[in-house]
Image (cartoon, rainbow, N blue to C red):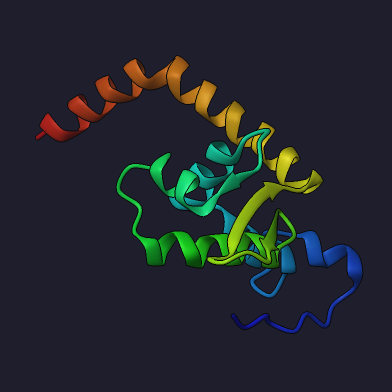
Length: 129
């Protein structure tokens, strides 16, 4: 993974409107369906790789590995390897990861509240001349 070099003032690093902001890069990393599902699946527990994989229908081994690494790189997930044979690897949300989970949970609540209206808007849009 390549990180862009941000050369502006520190307060601009968090400005999503700037193409070179660190915030935009972070947002791009974590704002994907797999990252959100991994965060929600980890929840308040420590889970093994296979538990996370089994908790997310349709995710491939490769996609889960890539997203867990990205979340770890961004400090949202902690990875612990136990020196056993075979090695046991566990994942836990960090404090920032738990904060993001609250946001993801709010987005899930929003979706449940508005899914009917969204479905109706899509039907109207898709059948409009």
